[in-house]
Image 1 (cartoon, rainbow, N blue to C red):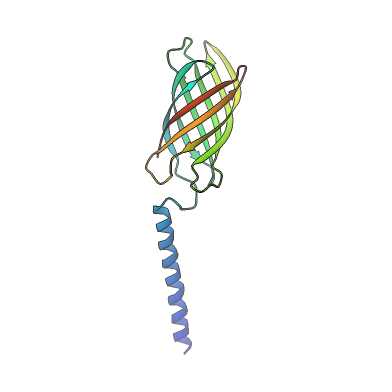
Image 2 (image 1 turned 45 degrees about the horizontal axis):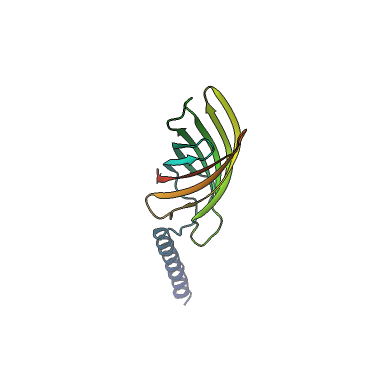
Length: 161
């Protein structure tokens, strides 16, 4: 009698383990798996309303938690004298919303033009496409605080590494 009960308990534990693994795989296929997304690299294009110029750049998305991502990026201003560029070190947060599409954050910004540099900070908010796709489009609005404050609108695509 004891061996029958022991076999039933072992069978139930094994069945529960298989069922929970199958559920986790289903959730992962639908993009609902827990844990941070994979690191990604992407490009960005935007417009700086203060400088009145378009910029192109790139970024890395390095997850540091389930909802937190470190985003170092560089932006190069096209057609402006003095070859201006901006380097950013940002921290992005995805609040717990229904699909996790919205984010906000802030960070450090360093602007360089004509041999002169200017450091400051930035704050931003944006929308990022679903995490289950092989690429993620994003659209962002950013305020950069330095000697002169500027407003930027940018967008781009990120690809997992």
